[in-house]
Image (cartoon, rainbow, N blue to C red; front, side, top):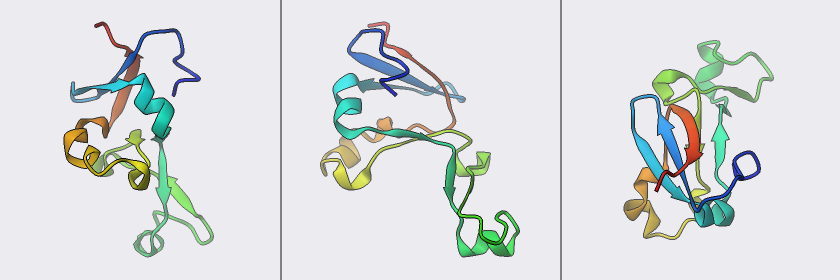
Length: 102
């Protein structure tokens, strides 16, 4: 994210389609390296429903699954207190990324 949005400022605002805006510190992005996910692993049920073809490993994240773009953080690397205190950093239906106006 920083590589594509590196024009200065300390914080980044990540907006969701429903108007939700999350402020994320540049240091959080540097330290934890979140990704913008557009696909997820194919699960056994996906092959039954034909959401995935035989041999397909990934499929697009659908709108009902909070896609098509989802800000994903490395859950195992985040400090435990982040799970409740910084819950707002998980953004679904990402529609825009910009520098904070603060």
